[in-house]
Every structure is written in structure tokens, then in C-alpha cells.
Length: 185
Image 1 (cartoon, rainbow, N blue to C red):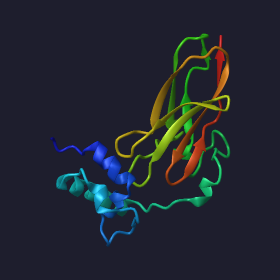
Image 2 (cartoon, rainbow, N blue to C red):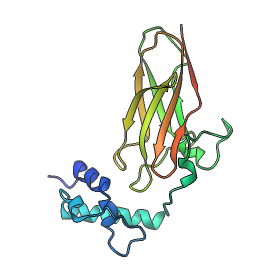
Image 3 (cartoon, rainbow, N blue to C red):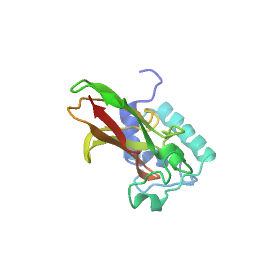
Image 4 (cartoon, rainbow, N blue to C red):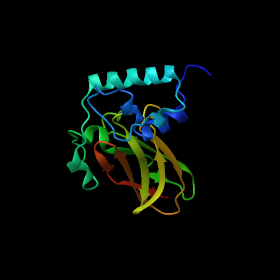
């Protein structure tokens, strides 16, 4: 096996809280879910590489959960004038404004209207969803380090509709895009 990280083992390890446990007792963060069993499947080299990456992340940033952002779905306060968390958390929809009836067209969702949301071990987007008329019609689950916070869906419409994208950040809650009107001609 080459030196690349075993993705399945890594995801299992992170999901169990083991990534935080790799840092040891001296770490600034700790996880009660961190157990030796969580790391099964990772080679010693993979554990060493992951530990180094996590230590670099801790040195680079302080990660804190903003509890206030988890109380409701967050939106831009002033559409078009983004500030603070809005810059990298409000989803942006890219799609045609007019489409032909029953013709497939792409809808690209990027998390971050001005700056792409990071996908690091301690700060990442869990999922991105697309809603049409209040109903979720598609979603994608994302994995830190391996994915970017960008998803494209192929849609087919038989009538005009309003699209809304949502995303969930592990530290800053759920965010919603501005409505995107698509007219069927």
C-alpha cells in the first residue's frame, strides 16, 4: 500500500473522536470519545502524519464553537454586503436564470460567497443541501481534508422554481443562501 492515508480508517477514526486523542494528554483539546480502538486501521506512519497535521492546525488556529449560531438557520444580514462569518459560510448558487422545460442544467453550490470555506479536521462543512420550494431535493455529505465545500447537482424542471442552498458547518451551524429564481421557458 502506498503512503497515502487510508481514507476509510481515517474517517472512522475522526468520527470516533480519535483524531483529538492522537495529540495526547498535553493537547489543548480533548475528547471523551477518543479510544485506542478508534485508531485501528491506521498504520504508525499514517498516525504520525495525522498527528503532525493536527498539531499544525492547533498551532495555527484556535477553534471554538459559536453556540449562538446553532439556534436557527443563519442568513446574510444584508445580501450583497457580507461580513464576519457570512463571507465563508453563506452558500452561493450558480445556475442559469432561464432553462428549457425538462432540459437538464447544472446547479453549483459553493460554501462561501467571497471566500471558500475551509475543510480542515477541526473546522469543516458536514453537508450541503439543495431545496426547491421548501423541499430538500438533493444533498451531499462531505469529509474534512478530502473534499472541497463545492457541490454540483443536475436538475430538470417542468415549471419555474426558487432554489435555496443550505450548508452545515461543525463550528458555526446551518447557513442558507439567498433565493435563486429559475424561470422555465
